[in-house]
Length: 91
Image (cartoon, rainbow, N blue to C red; front, top):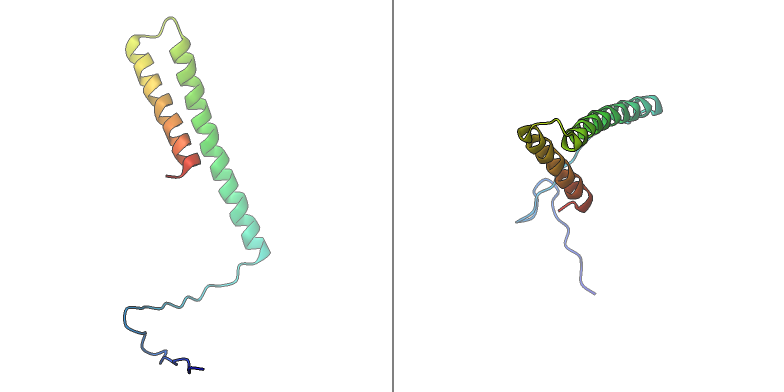
């Protein structure tokens, strides 16, 4: 049986680094506030994008909209669809 090497922790081995972090414990109340804040922001952003997408869809389907307006609406819808696919695929 071989003896395992014991390293001096005050100096990392060659080619290695180490880090130590100290984080405060998050209370249940703080975690709840953080989750509510994150969900509120997420749903506000989702609502804003849904309204923009609805405006773009109605613009594309409108008979009275100019061709420039329809191009703008289609580019937004294409970007939104690409962003959604990129988020789902994560590549």
